[in-house]
Length: 138
Image (cartoon, rainbow, N blue to C red):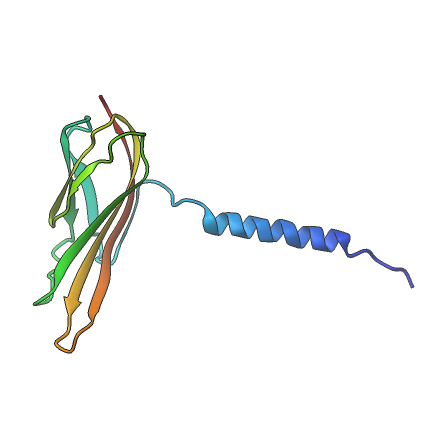
């Protein structure tokens, strides 16, 4: 009976494990919008210039918030130039972002519906998750 080495099998398993880990940990593709409301979107309006406000405008295509619910908007900048962090004035249906520094930005925008029950506790429903790339001029 011929003995076979486990080395090639272990090497193949290691390669597959590394490939799977890379797929799971990779960054989201830019300019993606996921919406819990059919056709819901967010778009940036205004000149992308340092010091000038840009509006993130949400469109939920007629979605109505339940009575007592409110919105929570989160904006993050996982990729941005060194220097001052952009100023964000969150709001719905518009959030205002002012970029202090020119350069390339990746902007993550989250719009959530938040409601509280009479017994305590909070329920959050994600309505829009967007990853947008933006080049800000001087």
